[in-house]
Length: 161
Image (cartoon, rainbow, N blue to C red; front, side, top):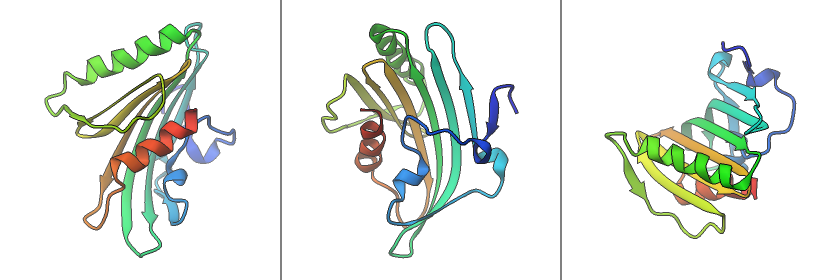
């Protein structure tokens, strides 16, 4: 484990964004029993006073009985200035566009300062609202059902507004 990383099961503070449990409000949710797959890393510096990296592995059992295996990766920043948040968001996109699997995804109007979605192995959202930036990748492995991109994107966007 990294120096500032801890098991998600040991973390007790409230997070400033949605997590896996928010994707399954009507279903059952269980984190992967292997704790080392569910971690949070906290950091800060003078350009970004709050930096959070989250990794969750879970199974969601929907009310209709379908099961959904999901991996969630989030990089979250609260920056010292609005312009810096915009640059962080653009830099993430610039880096990820280099992926050989890169494919742009269409987004509805999300009423935020900046948003972009693409597929690069898994669907990924970059969203910036004021001085907050979040990069969310949601990898779903289910033959029964997958949460549609426009549904999970709204969950995460709404959580940082």
